[in-house]
Image (cartoon, rainbow, N blue to C red; front, side):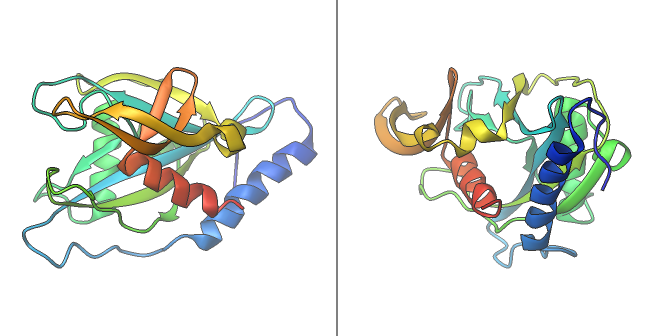
Length: 208
């Protein structure tokens, strides 16, 4: 498994690659079937790692643009979206959405490590979706080109998410204007909650 170059020690690089190898062994491989219930629409996202200077693992997060009527407007998320009829597989969905939203072609700049467990919205007020999170590693530096659907993107050092203080209960405002206490990861000014928090928690559990 190749990594982006760094001037730091080989021991640190081995540690980062070993962590990713551990994750890869714990992921599902092969084709992911579509949802069995035709009333539930499939979607896919990508949790994308890079090995940054200092050989620290970082994870890419995006801030979704704000649109009226969008239940995930302004949320912190992973790149991804709904499956379209021309997507042959859910991995095709994840790769296409990543290209469209942030301008990254994973197959030419990295590799897919596997898939996490599906997640579904828990609130009946949200659209019926079944989301497959894929995990990928970038093996070269890339420039992000954000679409109109993405307000911003940032890399989060993995230790910041693994720190005990990063996970806590917070109060958030829902799309209908009501407030609710939820489990979340907090990093700088960003609050990661909902479906993305559940995906992230599953991912972090496979790194332990």
